[in-house]
Length: 337
Image (cartoon, rainbow, N blue to C red; front, side):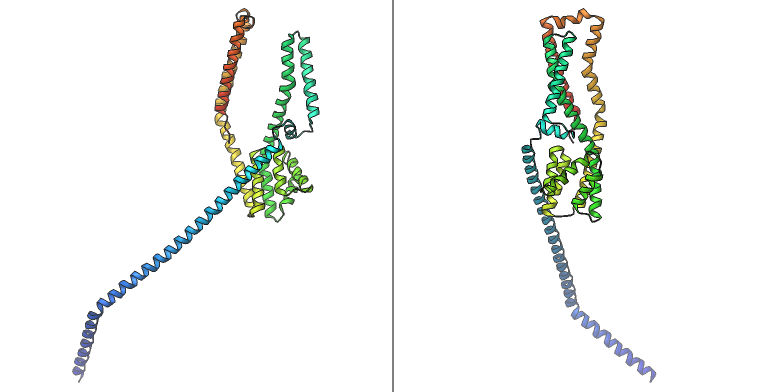
């Protein structure tokens, strides 16, 4: 009985395996087709998803490029408007330059001082026995050239001090805005506790707001007394933020970083060009030094240049060529950053 049961079980198992094999044989092709169809559908869905992702990424890139282009267009428009305003302000006039010195100088005081200096030099030259023509030339140079050179020197010195302190002032404004203060109060903080000449310039911005100007207009007016590209950048950032909005603290922080990088680049360029500047100074001073030494050792040899008409021609030609050489060397060693 036990053996019969085993045979029956074996027959049943064999029949089941045979039936399964026959079914698999008939259904194998269909199963493979369905598998391939599922794989193909999966690939198609993945490709569609990838295509959608690529399209979304492309749309984002296009949107960013459009925003960047619109920002660049608005920036160019603002720069053109500010250049027109700067031309209308008369930045090259003597009155504007006197205001840029940071001193209480008026046109009347300047002209009185220039005339006084010219008469003094003329009087001293006559007392020293210098001929009338040479004394007049010296008085002309002292009365017209020297005061304007002093004004230019004072302007450059004040601008250097401003550029040294301006990034620190921007950092203070950024921290004030992040702490919750409005831009107006941050500028008041600089105007009251800042370092000169940044303190004076921001005080003028605050005073301009008190007479009815907006913050962007007051920042643009800063170009009257501080005509620098850095100040122009600052006024453009304030104007764009006022028109389009955005994170002002981040924009001013980036501007501060850019200004510091510009300062480092200028210092690096000055260090690299210092050898060329020293060579230019030596080469430019060498003819005068040699002429002085020859005159001290052999006065009669050099006197021909000052007593003969041909010597006068040689001196004029030499001065022209020296001037051309100095201008060329100056352009070679000076870099705009």
